[in-house]
Length: 338
Image (cartoon, rainbow, N blue to C red; front, side, top):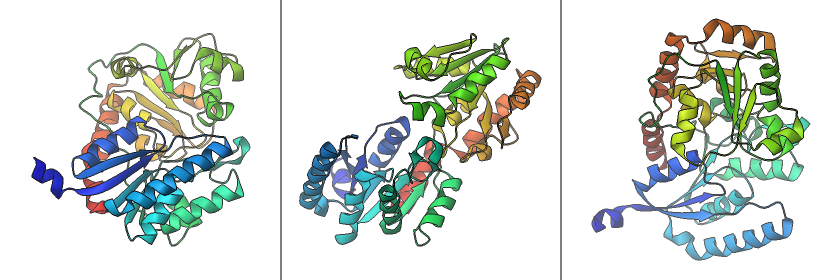
């Protein structure tokens, strides 16, 4: 066992948030590499950001020689120095792109071109990383347009089909969505205003928002009478139970890459509803309903006509198993990194 550890090549894993998709990569990479993690705590305060960048600089200066690979989740402030040191010391750097670090919604001051400085920073990261690894084909197109010389390979998010399962085909008239966060920007980027509007137009159905507290939701819009707001769920089993008993899963975002929650919900037999942003259409086309424009009547009609559609539930799960598994992502990551 010690021998295997010695033979493993060393990889530095840099992240600023430990979401389920980041944890999944960490677990996968740890099987093939000797992984050291570096957590860069995010902050909106410039002084604290400067201090943390100084600490990161000296950490890399002292430790960069230990690592053969540097793997970074998202292109942002925390990515500049790792990519720079990798380039100077001839190490390989891999930057995973999830959405906000490539996309842009100027109306809500969201994304890569929120400031000119940030746009130039991310362009530099794209050009100088050994490889950019966006989770969605739509993100690859945008990276190539921003930095034509960037090396880009799409590796979709992977989810665990052994954990996310279902057995009940017949379900209550329920539509669910998942959107954590506390800011107005997050509320509208995740399309919760659209979700609320659809709830108003369908009083016979129950609508559920997971991951956001009721008092925060109510700051931005008055909740529909048939809309239940559930805060952050700590237990994965409770989260899975909630989507297993929902008939539809809605992703009405204004910006996306490849939403993990959508993949997990489809594994649990939810029929997908979405807007054509990111790779939502690629995931849900032919199974659920994805529109290029927002029209509550179109979604209402689809929901009414396809409630408890057994064929769609089976197809939704099969689509994810065939294309978006942890095993498939892990194999692609290992092949590309090594």
